[in-house]
Image (cartoon, rainbow, N blue to C red):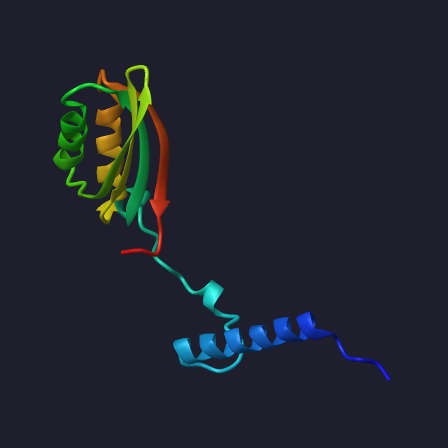
Length: 133
């Protein structure tokens, strides 16, 4: 007599069933949601999308640099949630920011201004932080 599919395949199948049940409850339906992908949906221009951002900047480590960066951000209504500085020695500093929710267009405008500052050596990382509003 066979022992069945085994512990892990059975657990996977059960989790798949639970996921489908939750999806059905959430969308108020029963069965598969095959038609969802065929519905017409409006797509926002990327400039209008609102999200948070994670930024890493390589900057000159001297007085007034943080003020220049925050001035550029505030000009485009970019509000900061967290700020952290890492001293890299040798006259450079790495600043790490997480923003509050902001329009993509505002963020891009602020980044363009930051790129043009004499104190900006590199914009190392720009990541959208999804699902956290």
